[in-house]
Every structure is written in structure tokens, then in C-alpha cells.
Amino acid sequence: MATAIGAAGAAAFAWGALVERRRYTLRQVEVPVLPAGAKPIRVLHVSDLHMAPWQRDKQQWVSALAALEPDLIVDTGDNLGHERGLEGVRRAFDAFAGIPGVFVNGSNDYFGPVVKNPFGYFLGPSRAHSRAKRLDTEAMVDYFEQELGWIDLDNRASAIDVNGTHLEFFGVDDPHKGFDRLDLITAAIDEEREADPLGEESWLDDDEPVTPRPTLTIGVTHAPYRRVLNSFVNHGAQLIFAGHTHGGQVCVPGFGALVTNCDIPRTQVKGLSLWHHGLHTAFLNVSAGLGTSITAPFRFACPPEATLLTLVSADTGR
Figure 1 (cartoon, rainbow, N blue to C red):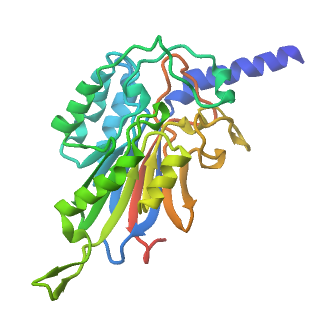
Figure 2 (cartoon, rainbow, N blue to C red; figure 1 turned 180 degrees about the horizontal axis):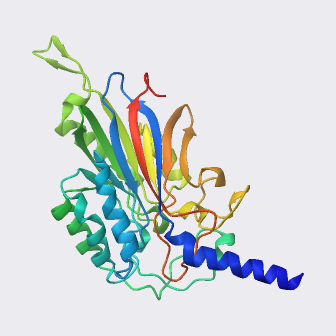
Figure 3 (tube, rainbow, N blue to C red; figure 1 turned 180 degrees about the vertical axis):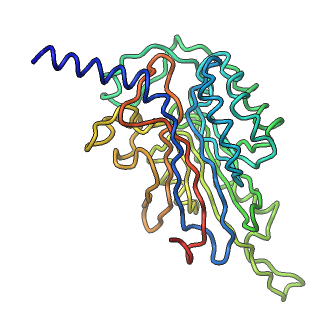
């Protein structure tokens, strides 16, 4: 019996370390969240690449997603996984230059990986390590902004028009390390709307109303902590994007994730769900991510993923 259990354990470990963590998967889902009559918007959500320069299979797989011709990219952080991770990030994302995108940073975009006790995750979210090496976050942000044309949403708000719909965005820097500034969201949103006021009903010549544009409000965060999700919903988010959890990374078939590495319920550790707070509700998409720390290269019953979300009007959602 002991021999059989040992053999099963060895087989599971080999599968998770050698096969499943490279079994990249595209999850596709339709979200009925756009205003009535709006044209569909295809959003590619990528997260948690934890990129090292030698991970060519992952780089090629991500780069090939450009053939999907998404209308928008949402990147929810932890792109770096090595001090030379930007080399691999460039190879993965160069093909997306010119496609509108938004991004936030995760903790691993600031600090390099360190060896941790995996059982520590059962005691709560992981903690900072003094041994972690500081990464070149500024170079990565410059690449996203200057070469890809993506918008940095770290404790900021912005807006773009896509397929005739006005998309309002606000986001926070990494909540896992406490870099989020939820207190800045209201001012950031107000400033963005003041700079582009037609998103709400306005008036010309004091007596002629202007019909507001079709608008969708989107919140973006790396780690889906409850405090962040609740604040986003309170600030009017209709759709929220997050990563960080790796979908649990190690799951039990029929049970699901064992840990979440934050305080989100296990049942919402990955995929599309609804987040309720008070009298408000938003769609929430949590990516299981495309990578793992190079110090813990293992997944089980939770393959790496990117998500293609097709946003459609609520009155035509199927």
C-alpha cells in the first residue's frame, strides 16, 4: 500500500511539474455587461506570467494570442519572475503593440522570487521577504507605456473609446503588499470625468441636453482582496479584473482550490463570477494566471490560462 501511495504521489508531482504547468489554456466567456445596442468588445485578460527569460514556450504561446485580434488587453500584473524577466515579457507582448491595453503591477513586478515553505500558504496570505531582490519595475512600465501604448492604472483612472463604447477604468497598485491607495480612487475618477465630461449627461447653452455616451466602468487590480473589490463596486465598477491567486495553483478535483493567497472566497478563486457588496453587483473575472514562481514550478488540476472575454450588451447576452 505504501509503495502504491508513493508511486501515485510521484506521478502526480511529475504531472504537475513537467506537464500541467505548461498546458496553457485559453478560457473563453461571454459577459452581458455593455449598454443596450453596443457593439461587442473582445478583451484578452492576461496575468501572472512570472516570466523568466528562458521560458520560450510560454512566450511563444502568449505572442500567438495576438492572432485573436482582441480589441483590448487587460494585464493584471506579476509579469516579472526573474531579474531578466523583461526579456521574456518583450518576446511575449511585442506582437500586441498598437492594441489598446491597461495594466497594474503585482508584488512580483517589484520583488524577485524567494524560496518559501508551501505549507505557509495554509496560514494565510504570503508575506514579504527581506531577501527578495528589487526588480527593474520602471523599465517594465516604460515598455508597456512607451512601446505598447498601454495605460498604467496603478492608483489611477483613465478612459478610452472602444467599438463605440466609452470605457472608464480605475485601478490600484498591488494590494498584496499594501501599495493600493483606495482613498485616491474618487479623486482620480472625478478628475478623469472632468477632463472628458460627455460620459455623463451634460447641457449645451444651458437648455439643450446632450445624450450621454454608452459607458462601461471597469476596475482593475492584481490581488482580489475583499476591501478592494468592495471599494470598486462602491465606486461604480460594472466589471472587475484581477489575478494573483493562480486559481489556487494546486487544486483537488471535486473540491477546488486549497488556498487563495488572499481573502477572496475559494469559490471565486478563478473564473467569472458576480461580486456583491451592499446593493451593488459587478462581474468579476479572476485569472488563474499563466505562470508560477520559478521557486515553485508546479500546478495540479489548475492549468495556466489566459481569458478571452466577449463583452456584449445586457439585452442580447446569450
